[in-house]
Length: 335
Image (cartoon, rainbow, N blue to C red; front, top):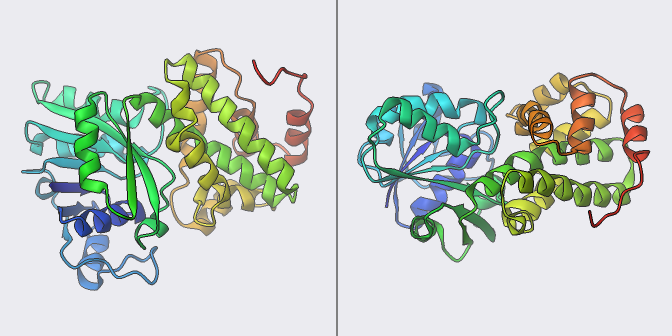
């Protein structure tokens, strides 16, 4: 396939490397000229050390070059820039193109998922455009994908045939692809698991042990599932790769920015200090406001998300928030 990738962060570059190795024609766009120049000249990415990228990836600064004539366009910018990127790309998208989001987040205020945002921008710009929209998610740290380590991802689209077409571009002996028609469920999983990962990191930073981590992850997937069901998503999505699978890796991996951010906060740093030390976008922070809004809108309890919000946004003491979380009324686990 001819594939355009919008975003040259670690995940965008890892996808480009994978897709080129599968004999696809790949063009990568970034809004940052210095980033594109560095990729062109060195075939390396500063945040993917000890990795040399395939030389046949095309790098561009003109978004039109990454959209015209493409069969598949993948949005891989941070979630906060998906709307502006979709608006820039819209005039240059051909009829029949598949538009896939590989970003994970929920927009503040609108509570839109990433595919909602893409569709919203298309409707504003070119309401007659014929296209399909999909989401890509799962336990897929860029640092491992770019090395060809065994990984599995979910291609979600309401049209199963589109999911299978995307899967055929990605699948190889290192990447196994599953399809799913529950697009909203896959995207809700991808956004909310980052918040749980911050909480898991905070517990680690506080030295609270493995029991606490297991508790946090288990109750976290329960919290994610509750809000997902209230929004009309399918329960099994949350038990799959995009749900429990992505949650496990994000709560445990050394590559997880969200988990690392939480750990630094647990050791006494502020969010600003932690994010500066990490040096890359911590998506769970940007999903917090939307998670609290969703909780209120659907009248669903999200105690872990509220706890993280209190720590990061309200600057409450870690020990006080943890005590309150552990002292909640006794509940039936099967509710």
